[in-house]
Each structure stands twice: as C-alpha cells, then as structure tokens.
Length: 163
Image 1 (spheres, rainbow, N blue to C red):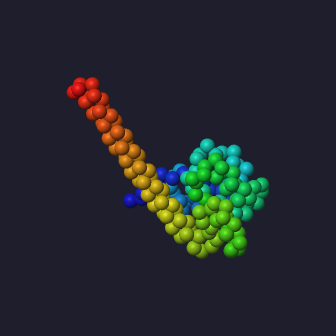
Image 2: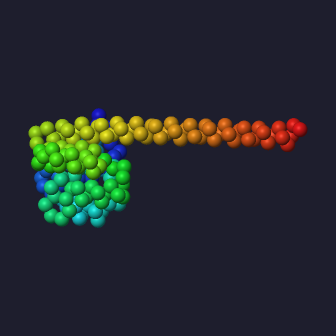
C-alpha cells in the first residue's frame, strides 16, 4: 500500500524528459501535489501553490538561474526546502547553494533518484518532528493558561464569596 504524501512539491527543470522522469518517480513515492515548470520566470508567476519542497535545476537555460529562483521563492516561503539538481559535480557550486539556503545538492546521474527519494523521506521526517513539537508546545501553553485562569478564578471566588 502506497502512502499518500501531503507535501507540495515544485519541480523546475528545463529538460522536459528529465522533469517528467522526476515527476513519475515522485508519484510512485505517493506525492500527488506536484507542479512542474521549465523556466524560472514561469514558476515565479505561479507561486500560489505554496511549495513545501522544491527540486531546482541549477543551470536553467532561459531566464533565471536555479539560484535566482530559490532566492525569490525563499523570500516568500522561507520554510520551503530546496534540493538542487545539476549535471555539474562542482564542489564550489554545491557549497554556494548550501550557503544560500539549499537543503542539499544532487548531481544528476545513476544515483540521483535514489538520493531524491532519500532526501524527501528525510525532509518529511523532519517536518513531522517539527509539527509534533509545535503541537506539544501548543498543548503546554493551553495547560499553563488554563492553570493561570483557574488560579485567578479561585482567588476571585475566595475574595468575593468566602470573605
């Protein structure tokens, strides 16, 4: 049985064949909220989607680079995780992308889809932990506020009805 994934995935890849391969792989993994674009300009015009994770080609052929796209999207959605895809095995590019806020950097090749699968699972697990942590914090806040309100009501009761 396949698990349906809740994350919105954004793919920006100028090689249409490779983009479709990525999309098929994501669908096999249970992702069904996927938007794909072949240019940076196109994705910037369609950001109502609110992506949780973006798979960006570093070397886009037409207008904006993958780095430009990431910076623009991250201003609007700072919690979005970006995984760069590229044919270049340049360490300087990898370091630069990570320095600028990318989650990771994958070189296209034989193991790229395995790495994508691994990273998406890792991001999902991290998001689940963050969500659980936020739920626990909300619960603790509610308990503390309840205790304070009960204490205030108890003080008021004794002040006005007992004395």
